[in-house]
Amino acid sequence: MNKNLFMKAKAYTFCICLLLFITVSCKKQLEPVTEATTNKKIASFYHTELEQCIAFLDSISTSENTAERIAYYKQARQHFKAMEPILAAIDKNNFKSLNAPNILQVQEEDLTDVKIRNPFGFQVVEELLHEDEGDAEVLQNAITVTSDRLKLLQGNTHIQLKDYHLIWLIRDQILRTAATGITGFDSPVLGQALTESQYTTQTLITLLELCKDKFSTVEIYDDLSASFKNGITALNADFDTFDRFSFIKNYTDPQLKLLVKTQDDWQVNFPFEMAVSNTATSFFGSNTLNVLYFSDYKSDTLHLKQKEAFGKALFKDERLSRNKDMACASCHIEEKAFTDGRKTFDARQVRNSPTLTYSAYQQSFFMDGRAGSLEGQVVGVAENHNEFNLPMDSIVNRVLKHEAYKMAIDSLYGNKRVEFNIRHAIASYVRSLNAFNSKFDRNIEGVETSLTAVEKQGFNLFMGKAACATCHFPPLFNGTVPPHYNDTEVELLGVPETKDTLNAIISDDLGRYNVFKTDQRKHFFKTPTVRNSEVTGPYMHNGVYTSLEEVVDFYNRGGGQGIGIHEEFQTLPFDALNLTKAEQASLVAFIKTLTDADFVEE
View (cartoon, rainbow, N blue to C red):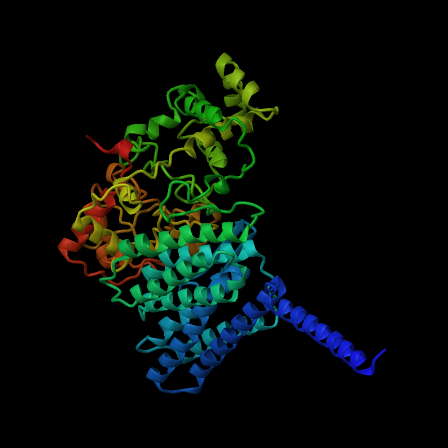
């Protein structure tokens, strides 16, 4: 072969090989980022924030200057909030402990297993730093315990998030910001709620950037990122005057809608549903929460509508009581939003009949939280000497003697657990009493624009300055804590025996104490829903207040502490809210907008 021709062929071959090498290399660089790579980047961000958090927290102890200590705390808190979306997703229990309020922690599993622990974490440190004559040793101990827990996380955190975990993480933080972030739930003294919500939202932007290659539709990424950025701008506001109603409409709900588009774009397959629906597109939507998540019997949904109808019949049947003179409907009258309008039903009762609407969305039942499910609550009513006073086996016999009931049992339930079936039917009916169609719901959902300026101001007060939403969490406005909804809180408010506000005496009902005899739980009661309150008076566990105005006045004074009742473990802040008469009226006006359409008088 001609030498020149040979050299040209060799050069040509070399060029082809080089081109192929470059093409393959470029292709590798353009390949989508793997799950492992994304997790590595998320872990790097998380651990950087964690290290900074620990460093600033430990720095508090190096200074004698109060202002400097508070400055160190703020920086530590900033880094903690920056990692909040991730920590809350991968380690719920440690997040909860590190972010717990400064009140005694009581865990009651059974009579032989009651744990009482002093709180620690950022809220505790924040309050101790601001005490005029604080105990230096107590403060140092709180800092040390908090720092040690964070250091424990350093060496024991392994981030392995799949796409559906990331969607859950982002959704939870969007809802956490709306439900607790903008309410001041965890910034008790500094009042940095809106600023801290900016930190957590910035983390969502960072996570989106790390996941950008997952998007096949760049417009969805751009829109969601822009919504978070604009949300941060909106959060740069005064706490007392911040328009939370508009924030939820303009940012929370659009972000939830964009997140559903994101999961469709990523082709995410969810392994199961949790408390919040995987397709939730609004904060206050009727389908946002999965009611069966709160049930012990999540899988028993076959013929559910028929079971609800069967349960409704049992609910109204007086034959389920010993003397055949009392039904569930006797104390829970449908027209009164399933209450009875009385202080107590009769002389044998010591507590007010609470509404059954939205009661399904709880993790404990009865005012003292002694039952763990609606099915269990049925047993409590049946066997209570002052209520049905009839053992469940006797109720079973009466039900089976009723031809239509027996037919319903046989056709709807494919098992012989008749007692369970009766309880499940009644509980299924109660779980259906959640309309989410109040005037407020229709307005926040954009169905109508009928809220008055006073009513909207009332919502903003409820969610902010008046601090109502730090116990009555939206969208349920009860004590079940979002966004995971695993706990239903009990509180000590200091409710008086009578309306007298001078030298008041606390109600003699010991509440939660009667369940486990835990001294630190005397006078504690479950936080009920505020929904339908307009038609469910009188109020409190003993029906002491007859109007919403009286209830608001009680809270405005600082609860029991404000009317002369001094209880060591009162969970309600002692300080008066100092709301004006107009602001109190706005609160009442808003609460009345939470009345479901079925209970509004024409």
